[in-house]
Length: 109
Length: 120
Image 1: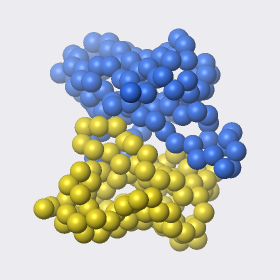
Image 2: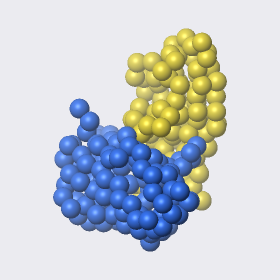
Image 3: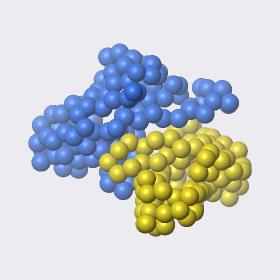
Image 4: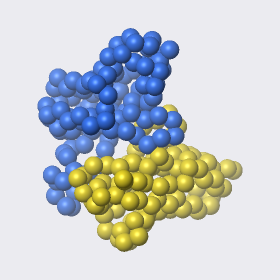
């Protein structure tokens, strides 16, 4: 079966750095997405990785290692508004999106 | 400048009473999707339309139907809602289907704000 694993919940302090990990086992790979979802709202696109390495976009960076089936989302200079769930989704060989259940990130002052 | 609009934001229905959720888009995207998301769970794809071509996921119950009368609008019909159908329903669009775009194109989903369905 296909599987995406993320921690259920993480807590971090305002101004700090947090890394949210995602591991996957899928039939093939055609890219990995990170989405942010605030409570009661729709997901919004954060990043897309298809090649190994780090993609930086402002305070957010996303890393991919295809050989390890592993990605992380790195959030720097945390702000209270970053409190949300972060969803990892992998596109398999059939271009189907396989979603993780999300990591709920709680930011404390 | 909402691009994918879902109505209503909250919907309450009775057990067994048909309900319709609506979605419209101003992006002129070819593909429209309906997802079901329960609390703290991954979104679950119910079906999608590529233009007028309807694609049902294998495990989507027959209780769920969809209509896309034109490019801009898509509807989700739940014929006989059960208590287990209470969830957030997300409509999303994409310009094309993954795999049909050039490798340089990062396709991504544009989501509406969702409709939270309660079943009493």
